[in-house]
Length: 157
Image 1: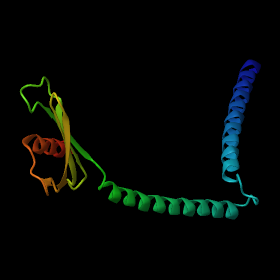
Image 2: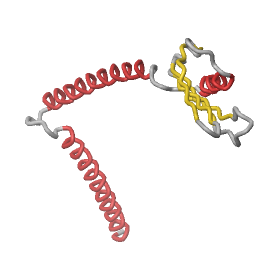
Image 3: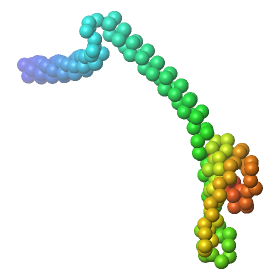
Image 4: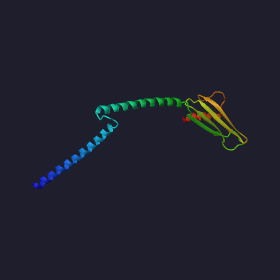
């Protein structure tokens, strides 16, 4: 009978020790969380802690609204930046070797921009630039290669 009472006491003691360890871990976790909540607050009462949290949330909300309006402005302005690029290389003259000439189309979101063409021969290289509005030439006639460069630029985007 003494042996079983001793075993029972040992089991109760181990259970109480485990219970104490669990409660200690929980207490330190809650205490750590409480310290984080009360960080930067002079008075450590619940009302001042909640007021600080609400003030922080309203500051964050204002910053999010400011960032959102800035993003909208950037998106609106970026539509007019070069977004589409098309390049075609070609050989316009039979007496030169390789595709040294090119047409490069640089277009924005509305297909406005320019086409730059370079015609390379043995003696000289000539460079031409032509404005583009809505994917079409406005002042000058486009060559086949320039039209293809514009098509390539429009395909990519």
